[in-house]
Image (cartoon, rainbow, N blue to C red; front, side, top):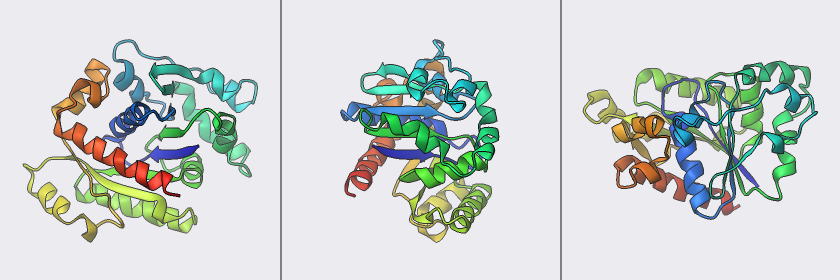
Amino acid sequence: MRIIAFYSPKGGVGKTAAAVNIAYLASQSQCKTLLWDLDPQGAASFYLAGAEIVKGKKLSKLLDGKSPVAKFIHDDVYPNLDFIPAHSSFRNFDIKLDQDAGNNVLRQMLAPLSEETSLVVLDCPPTLSRLTEQVLALADAVYVPLVPTWLSLNSWTQLRDFAKGKKFGAKKLKPFFSMADRRKRLHRELIASPEDYLEQPLDIIIPYASAVERMGEEGQPLEVLAPNSVAAAGFRKMWAGIQRDLWKR
């Protein structure tokens, strides 16, 4: 079982859209996939189900060990794609992690799924917290969407330094530009030479696109909603790279 995460210290950078689209593409590649929405805002539910929001369960029973993680899973939201939706109680995740600081609680929760699940995709909240630390320690790769702005690049520097300081292995961080708008001069300049600002950036540019915004309205991944869009092609390219990176090990 491989585990990847989509994380950014900043909100509103296309993180959840990337997580949902990659999870869907993985499932369509006959890869048994679990998408876990760890963000209490629960945006992944909108992208997967639209008005028919998939409701999550309170975190307490899972954290207390009274209920296994399997009880929180909604099976086959799409073929081969299982989903753990967020719940507002997920904001208390860090309290439990602080109480059990010696263990990677996320690793323990996911371990029973390893025989049936090929890929776990974690959609993480935009906070730098104990949960972030456990995700960085656990994941095989962490994909970091960045809007081509100086503020977003500054958040990347902070995350990279944090990962290095905690010895999580900064090489597992995979930055890429997201919500890029080529009409803006700064965006054009930054995406023209990403290696000048990022360490080992992905050769991926996800554009700012109305099709991505419609995901929340229609409740569908891009491969269903607008497969011919430039953004959908970008995510297909990203998934092809993820496959190479994860299964060459």
